[in-house]
Every structure is written in C-alpha cells, then in structure tokens.
Image (cartoon, rainbow, N blue to C red; front, side):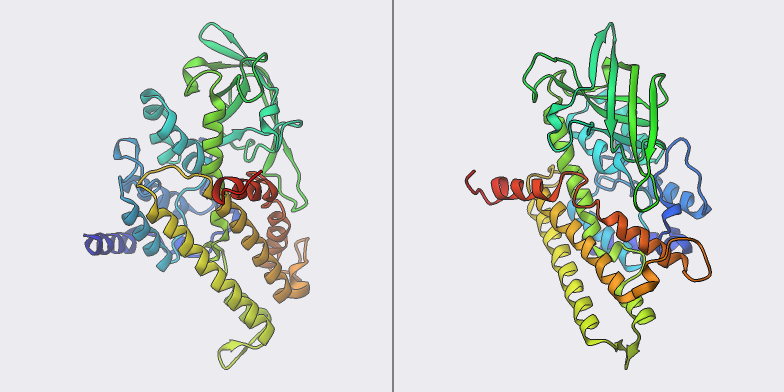
Length: 393
C-alpha cells in the first residue's frame, strides 16, 4: 500500500510542482497566504492552490477540513518525496502549525468548520497574542483584560513580540477574564479579527534590519464569545498545548535540508574543492559533523512520530526538539560565516555583496532569537529535565 502511495505522490509532484518551486525559497516569496497576500512569483500561488486542492498543505487533517486524511506513514512518504525534488513548502505559518492543530483538539464543530478550511487554503494569516511587556517567560502574569458585554468581550491591553501581526488577518489571544482568580486560572483563549476597530500594530525593528515582530495594542476591541476556544477561564490548558505545537514547529529549523543552499554548495563557492572534496580539512570535518547531526536529528524526529499514536498531540518531548533544533540552526549560521568570511558581513546593497551574502548576514543575526522565541532554551531544558527525564526538582 505504501509503495503504491509513494508512486502516486511521486507522479503527482512531477506533474504539479512548478520548476521555480524546486529551488531555494527567497525570503520575499514566503508562502504565508492571507487576505492581503501578494505573490512576487506567480508560481508560489499556483503551488499553494494545487497543494491545497489535494489536501497536501495540511496532509494529516481530516478531508472535511481541507486536509488529505493521510496516515503518519503516508505523511512521512509525502515529506520524503518532496525533499527528493527540493520542493518548497506550499504554505507555512501559525495557521497550520499552531492554531489549526489546537482547534482540531479543542475547537467546537462550528469553529472547525469556519476556520480550518480557510487555513488549509491559505486564505487567512494568523498571529499569536501571548507575550506582554511584563509577561514573557512568566506568561501567566498576563494582564490583557476581557470584560463580558452581552454576546461579546471588550478587550483592552497590549501584546509584544507578536510575530507577523502587521500582516495578520486574525489573532489567537490570551486574555484575563477573571482578575480575582489565581494567575493560571481566569485566563481565556479567544480568536478575533485583526481588522476589528481598536486594534493597533507597531512593528519592532530588529538587529537583522527586518521587522517581523510587533507591538499590538487593544483599545476596547470587541470579540465574539462564540470565538472562545474550550471554556471561559480555562484557556491556560489550550495555551500550553499550543506551545507544544509551536515548539515542535520551531524545532524543524534544525533540519538543514530545508535551507536555501547546502553547506557543501557554500563550501565549494567560498572555500574551494580539491578532487571533488572540500579543500580545507577542518571545514570538511565541520560540515561532516553538522550533516551527521542533521541526519541523527531527522531520524530522532521520525522515530518520535512513528512511536506516537497517529494524530496524537506532541508532549513535553517537543521541548527537546525545540531546544536542539534551534541550537543546530544557530550552529549552521556560525559555520556559514566561518566559510564565507568577510563575504558574510555585508549590509548595504552594492556590487560587493550578492543577495545570498546579504541574506546570510541577516539570517545569522536573526538566528540569535531562535533560543528565545517559543520559550527560552533555559525553559526548555527545565521542561526536558522534569517532564522527559523525570529528574527531581
């Protein structure tokens, strides 16, 4: 059965994956979708639509919600066949990696029917309203309030580090609905439209020169009570589960096979080859070690998927993947800089630096946030120690 499915997938990809979607993905061709999406490369939208029609943007979701209903094994086959032709992901973002899985687990039938098909088709861009200026690692100290008013909640407060909020259509947000409850209680998980009156977004400029993170302000924003996920005052349970989905997703950046150019290609261009091998023995050893770690990480993630029940939500082991994946990605950029030398420290546009070199500089700076976002590395190590290894407090 698997061999037949593999053949079908291979043939479908050969017929439907456009040529430019089998190349490294530039940052300005990010397939996030959404109501305001603009596609610099028309084939990005073609690829998204074809994958969505087949259910391959969310392959393990039920067909009724826009997925393909694949088993865990079939999903692995799809990923392998896409990797073989260097196919780009057709759709990425918090919709498919975070809020979608959370809705599948905790959403009402109406919420699933309303939101999931739109996520699968890339029609809505989502952002996350978790962190606040005084509630980061101690997230349960959040103060954004939601006061009931008929069929709505009136929301006031501020979020920070809201990734992609300046492009987002909807937000999944943690709000305090019972100020008198203990800090882990009295929190509600709610969804609302970023176009609603009272929502203000201010991008934050990073050392990389980009502004993917934002400050988000809510001034008497009205959110429908029907968009509360799970129960009122029980949002912390949903929030923790969604963080596990997020950490698993972030951990995926540790798989270097998904990156623009391979380490071997970079070494060939900047270090040189000798009889087909990387000329510098130290660089060759470093690239080999990184590749071995990549492969071990891929196999460990695959084993974890195969050992879990099909469709089962990730547990505390997601913290292990988040920690190792982000550290591996940071090591990759350090290795790139060591190979590229002064070519990797360019900033302004000029004849001196290529687009790839400038992107590498910014990517290296951006990678420093990997060990902070989605929960710091220190927090992840504590979770691994307690929840995975069972060590005493």
